[in-house]
Image (cartoon, rainbow, N blue to C red; front, side, top):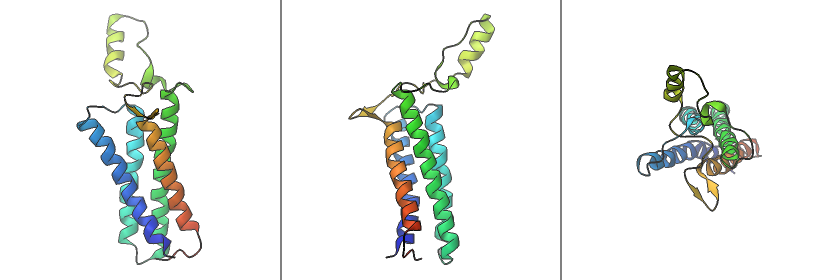
Length: 161
């Protein structure tokens, strides 16, 4: 079974698809990302060049597998952030204060500075959901499964270039 080519393909296709979906929701759907949404995107953005390096080095199976594994870990990181973000949206745990608090008291200049530094989109409110699952939740589920599959393909017997 040739599992390394499949792992490499997933390591490239998954972050491209997830980022494509995120940007489609942003630019076509008008749903602007919050700070934690960006963190999820950054991990996918890191996975793409790692997967491209894995493709460039496919003649060296061990090195290609290493970069594919790094891409899989980046995808898994995005999924982990997505699950944390979904928990914040569902109110299961407290979010990060930079994402979801209102300005504290103080003089008017301090309050204005806090407002201007606060993200426009709150991290603790899901702007969209399907079947009760938010975009962050879908990213967590899909990216988590993809990362596990990529790593399983790399670890499994018969991994060949």
